[in-house]
Length: 229
Image 1 (cartoon, one colour):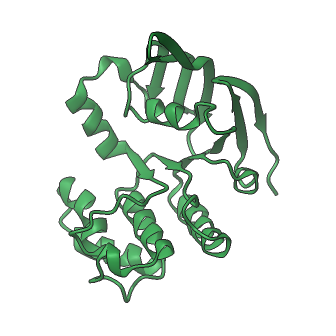
Image 2 (cartoon, rainbow, N blue to C red):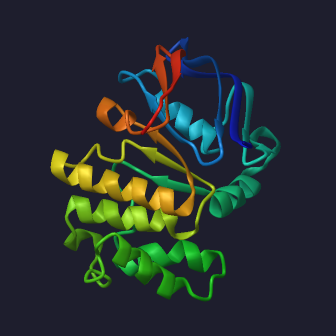
Image 3 (tube, helix red, strand yellow):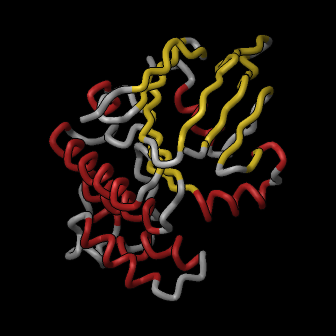
């Protein structure tokens, strides 16, 4: 299988007053295309920083990241933005929907940016799939948290990304709503053959993925492949 993400000897340091704070140290792993993968660890272990680096949202200090066959450090900001627009999907804990746009507009905008002539129709189909066919014209403020995250799911999959990064996708949801969102996430992921990378503190959610990477203090402490029936 082709590697869709290849991380080698990754190091990231931030200034904390007079001191350097190393958030990630000597992190190396790879992910195969189509794999489901979770990154877990306690608060402050470097999970979200790692996801941001892998998605090209932040720059590394040492090491290399190859995403979709491209070495990220060789790209400028415009090239990174183009790569993300064409190949990458995102789901965030706080949904990050555009408050001035309806559910339908939130999902169709990424498609329109790609020049898709069927943007609105495809967005409607995706909202139907996540159970929001009667919410096209609702604004985020008119939707519950679970409904907002389902709109975010539809938006993330709208461009049929090669890889999707989900940062604590159930972090702001109650348990029952979170379970429904995760079911939809995995169903859409399977249908579209996307590579799924989830950052989570929820070990039950992590157990649903094929591989679990555990971080502690910015270092990998285990990288387990699981047998999923």
